[in-house]
Image (cartoon, rainbow over all chains, first blue to last red; front, side, top):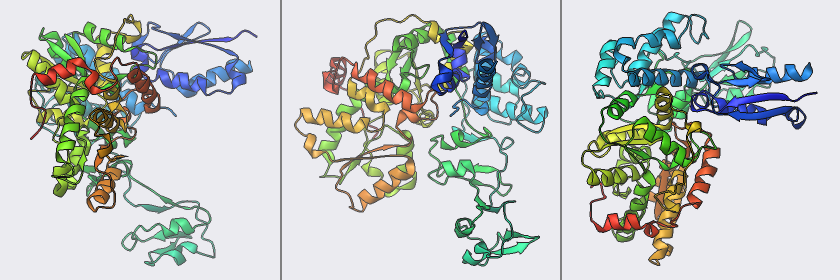
Amino acid sequence: MALIAIEICMGSACYLLGAQDLLEAIESLPPEKKAKIDLRGATCLKACGSGPNIKIDGVLMSNITPEQLLNLINEKIDR
Amino acid sequence: MTQVTEVVKLRRRVLTEIARLTFSGELIENISDILNTVVTEDGPRYRCCIHKERAVLQERIKLALSQPADVSLEAAAQNAVNGIIADMPVVQVMPIACDQCPIDKFLVTNACRNCLAHHCINSCPKKAIMVVQNRAYIDKTKCIECGLCKKSCPYGAIIEVNRPCEGACDLKAITAGSDRRALIDYDKCVQCGGCKTACPFGAIIDRAEIVQLIQALKSGKRVYAIMAPAFIGQFGPKIHASQVIGALKQAGFHEVYEASFGADIVTIEETAEFLGSVPERRPFMTTSCCPAFVGMVEKHLPDIEHIVSSTVSPMIATGKVIKEQDPEAVTVFIGPCIAKKAEAERSRGVIDLTVTFEELACVLVGAGINITAMTEADYKSMASLTANDFARAGGVIQAVIKHAEKANAGANIKPHRAEGLSNCKMALLQMKAGKSDANFFEGMACSGGCVGGPGVLTNPKVTGKLVENYAASSEYKTATDNQNVVETLNKGGYWHTK
């Protein structure tokens, strides 16, 4: 199974709106789930007004909360 | 745990929008647009309806402009653009936003089974509990809030309710008014910001000076940033100090100073003050860099006010250095602290404006500046290791001891310290009563020291470690290794408040 590609924007606008919480949510996953994720940081995903932004398998998602992110990851893993 | 809650997001969106409109010069015409861009028809809903949300938002915007509630939004924007900061307390309750949390400390919940044993009734020393409609009921007129009933219930059916603002205030300066809305007693409040952080409704806020700052940046005046040493890691754990400085210059700051430069001056002055006055003129001395701590002593322990060091804070010392070199300078303190806004107000002429790290980040985002995109450059701190550690609890003590050791006087100092205003108060009362042989006390209002302040962006545990690493990378180990500081002091100058 291919890894889930997640890019978290760490730009100032997204940082201000909680990007760090998203990163910590992923860091707190159990190792077997974390091993299925290819996690990268981004400097800007060009959607600054509606952060925090992430790209999950290339799809941009805005205004994401840690709970939503974990749900997305679990859905992808279960599929 | 999530740090950036919806309350925090809302506050930051408002500040960022205000900053963006101020940079583009449209604040006065378009201020009311914020009511629609931040609170939208599709939610999310925090309150009963969109109208209440917008009414709260109006108050929030006015305080973000440092203007009183009784002026129109447009007039408030006009005043802020003209650089006016209204004469009002730094920390305020927005009455309309306060949810009037319950004042009954102990409540019987649905979990009560009206059992036969009735431990609650038996445990109550005031006979305040009876059974009403098949459930225990606490008569508020008799209850003395001792909590024995809560402890006695085997179902845990009696809960203790604390108003978050009251629970956060160590100085009992915030209470419920007759309509249950929070009221701040400014004779007791030292503007530490504890209640602001605690209120889950975001009903308590500190007035901001961001529009006044942006106007100064746009005016072409020479604006100097004074960065508190806790700035390391605030804008992202991987952000280098040089990137923050680059971003500030891009936003229009003329020069960036570290407040730790002033902390080196304070270390030397405060050590001399200590060695010259303890124990001959006073039994012990305390630090003076935390304005909330100093305020606590002034307002709550006035009979021992003389034990607070008269040395100025690092912020003021750095401001004095800048104003001495450039009398036209506009000095802006940027830090984790809300109480500094009040301290700066008392020292206008030395510090012109004060913003928190959170407010600064909103200003930068409003200017379209992304700190992560700034190029890293070589940068060495302008202060010593010990001065950079002022940002962490225990840092001032270390700095003073290390400096005193150079004069072989380190052994004269018997340090003691506390974090949190009620802990500080208790420790000082013990020292006053002679129950401790300590003679030098460091008081910090915030847990962990300045890195734990209410205006920070990053988890204090993370920044504490990053500040420690940054301090260790300093060229100078102690205050007197810092030649620029020694030269500044040789030129003279007065570094005391009295």
